[in-house]
Image 1 (cartoon, rainbow, N blue to C red):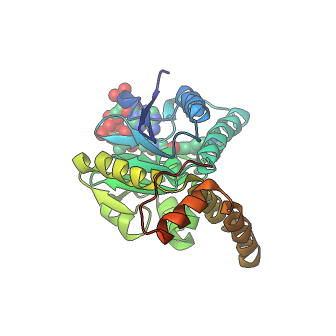
Image 2 (cartoon, protein in one colour):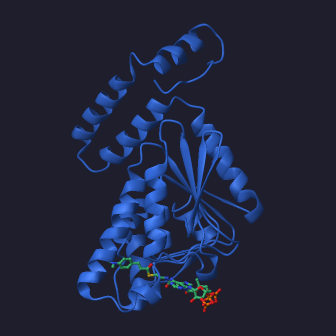
Image 3 (cartoon, helix red, strand yellow):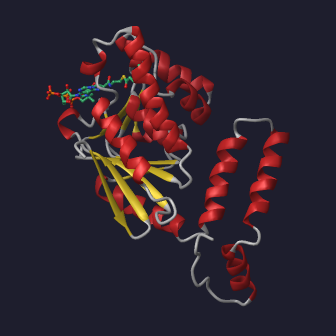
Length: 258
Ligand code: DAK
């Protein structure tokens, strides 16, 4: 794979966008590689993914402006669809995805981080949606996910002004959950991922589905969704083991994803 690496540490997968010379900007090849890597993740064995960028300066500095600059309307739409399909795949992956944002997260970089379940960042991280300064709208879901995450008022301010924000402001508005030094970021991401991976996988998966799908429908419909996903956990080995361990005052031996 030219621009994306994939490593597995225990039950945690680490996907790294690796095009540091262009600050990990997303061109078609990066998107194709990312698609292939996501498809290859064994979501039965791997229980949490971390997405990060190579190098010390950038997570992802957006879609590749050189490649985008000559697109026709039809090609632009196709490029947008390619990115959107991959970002949606990440968002709906059955296991949680943590974005470890290690620097610039601009345009498509901010957007891919928002397709992840959880964002944490280093203190040199910079977030922004600079698209209107380039004569385009955010094209990989930015208008939709940013408004859902930080509210329409703040999202509109960021998108209309194209102003970048630093890590402390990203934390204040709820775009990231925590800020670490550059050295502490990956250890913190791995610790969080390991904490998720030790919990019952079917339950974690159902929580992700309940939250994601529930946010798309009315509260009455969302509660029904939750009921079904709650019910789905019962009779599983892991539900029986989790509850038996509590009642027998012992630690869970192992959750087996069944
Ligand atoms: N694309 C291509 N190359 C990039 C890049 C990008 N987005 N960002 C950086 N690079 C390259 C630079 O050209 C430079 O390459 P060389 O000149 O060395 O060959 C190298 O990375 C290092 O960058 P700088 O020299 O500029 O580094 P600095 O530290 O001075 O500045 C920076 C870092 C991140 C502030 C700056 O590079 C920058 O402003 N980059 C562009 C940020 C940006 O505007 N990103 C694009 C956002 S727009 C759509 C689908 C998707 C999208 C839109 C529509 N549809 C089709 C529906 C998404 C759009 C976006 O993501």
